Length: 115
Length: 113
Image (cartoon, rainbow over all chains, first blue to last red; front, top):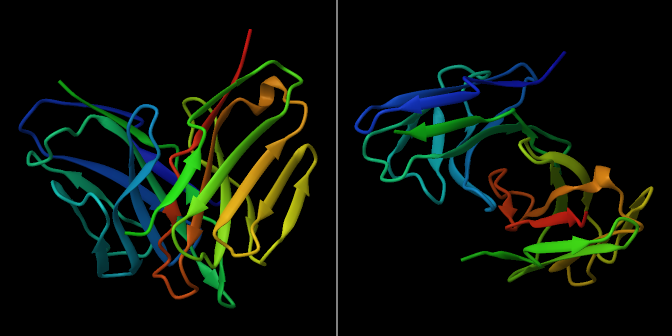
């Protein structure tokens, strides 16, 4: 089955610690995204990557970092500089064929709680 | 900056009543997509509209894209408990917009007990 996996599902972190969230896709998609969702809120874009070894900041990149060394992997690091990191983190991917903008496929998400 | 406003934030309905959510963009969109997020889950793609004035139906769900490609709506007829969740609209500014979607804040559909 093709899809997007995120791990872990729940993550607890002490203040001042960096933590890395995993995102892997086997859909052969070019573009990958990280979103943050707070309770009762919409999706806010943290970082996105259109191609391997390239990524761009989204609307709320401060306190986060990413890498895209492989097409199928786009890990997100939440650093200690992120002031309020407790949230639901969603990874997504998409591809574009024949200039048609296709839908984004989402992973199951990681719920990060800072203690 | 580019925004997509979505209203209402919440809608409480009795089972069997209709539900509608509206999205409005400050600028023209190349397309509009709709997603559903069940409680505790992740967004799942429902449909994409591309043409001006386009209307698409999926069983009890009707999706519209405005003539100016700045607004869209989702209407659910005779809601059921399986419809519970948050519905998001999202659009691309142009076909060459770096794959980035502009998201609405979502409308949460709540079925009254």
